[in-house]
Image 1 (cartoon, one colour):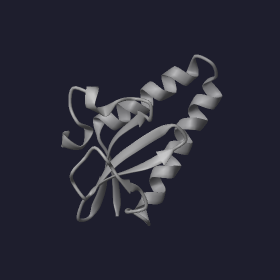
Image 2 (spheres, rainbow, N blue to C red):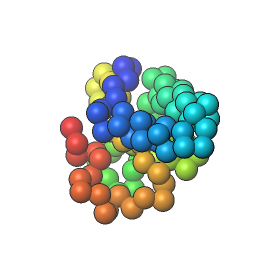
Image 3 (cartoon, one colour):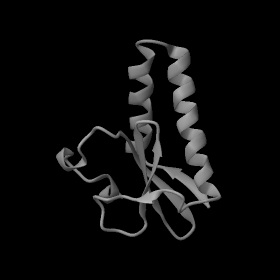
Image 4 (cartoon, helix red, strand yellow):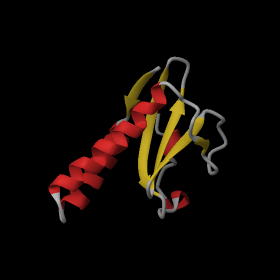
Length: 102
C-alpha cells in the first residue's frame, strides 16, 4: 500500500514540531520522525489502527501514538493520512471533520 499525506496532516506535523522546538529542536525533530515511523508501519498493516469513534465510515481509522491520534483512510491501493491531532482535542469543535477533507 502507498502512503499519502494530505496538506492538513503535513501542516499538523509542522505545528507539532514548531511547538516542541520551543523547548528542544532535537526532540522536536525526533518526535516527528517517530510519528512518521509509526505511520510507515501502516504500509504492511493498514487496518492495525482502530476505527475512529466519531466517524461513521468503516475505512476511517486511527493510530494512537503517545498523546496523538493519527487519523487515516484506507483506500483501494493507498492509505491517506488525514490529520495528526492531540488526543485531548475535541474533534466536534473543529470547523471540519478530518475524514471529510478529501
